[in-house]
Length: 254
Image (tube, rainbow, N blue to C red):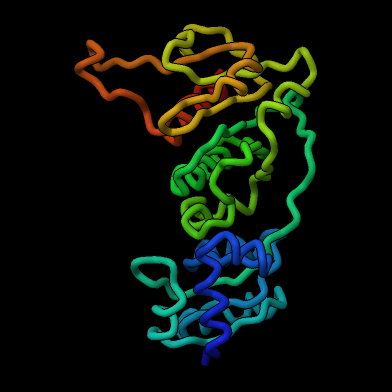
């Protein structure tokens, strides 16, 4: 049975200030909880329904992960989802690593002020799919441990390193030979441009695009062409996560 203090703590973690204060975050869903169980993240406790515990108890005990049985009514009180899942993990917010990263060794994603939690989570999942193991975010980008971000990663948060920094300073500090590809409406057609297999892929804010300070560091401006006819006859732009997937796919295809 959940105590009043446990319920209060878990509910508070929907807000960043309390995640920062307690150094805890929540992850919900059977697949996501078990992905975290197999990752470097430290799970403090798993709260789950009786049936889920029966199915996964041996695995949890083998990994020495504490768990607590809760009722459906209790799960409804602590969930951040519209429909409660059978399992919720309370995990530690780790100390994030330190830059620098090595864009001369592989592709690195850089996110300039991504604000939508679903977009960030999906971008992390996209990076995981295309084997991109590091994402560098501007300090204004939505918090990695926002429940909606964690949910949207579908477990990929366990495999992709995410860092936060002053993005223009980071970009300007890179070796002079580093290619920094920025996505712009007026950039060169990505399907016609010569692309290097390593470097930075810079994705801008959902509404404003890449900021002026970050844009000043870009070495190559690229664009995803529209095939919808005249400008008035097609969408104004692509969703940030969709654009990231298209760009990553083309770089990996090459």
